[in-house]
Amino acid sequence: MHASRKSRGHGHCGRHGYGHGWGHARGFRGGHRARRGNVRAAILALLGERSMHGYEMIQELEARTGGQWRPSAGSIYPTLQLLEDEGLVKGEEVNGKRVFSLTDAGRKAADEETSGTAPWEEAAAGADSPLGRLRVAAVQLGAAAMQVGRAGSDDQISRAADLLTETRRRIYAILAEE
Image (cartoon, rainbow, N blue to C red; front, side):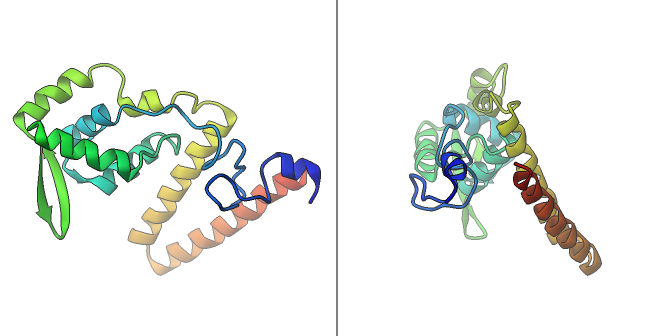
């Protein structure tokens, strides 16, 4: 393997044991990431917008931070349990999923804890760097592709797939410019 490619983190298994080519030394999974966000405040803020299940919160926070912050289930679910124990959220089974919403006390706590900057904005600080901009663009592209997949006609889905294939080729061509 060419030394410069290896130094960028390609071609090895990052700390998580896989090598997906996202530049593990400083990329999407294994390297430098935004500082951890305030999970409690983020949950309260999200539930202030609408009821959600835990995994939905994880996805929403990842999307809102352009991939900079993806809290683990090991931080979301214990925090939800704590908030439920405190009487700030209530959970109920809806279509086989535990969906959480704010109680009246939870709305008050959300107003107190989330005044000012949204927790996900604090966690995404640095998203205006070149790598941060790439992450945001990739997440937004993925969301657009998924929306076409959910709502598009067969022709629209086919055209979107062709466009994504061409875009992938052009991105690899950028790396080949070296």
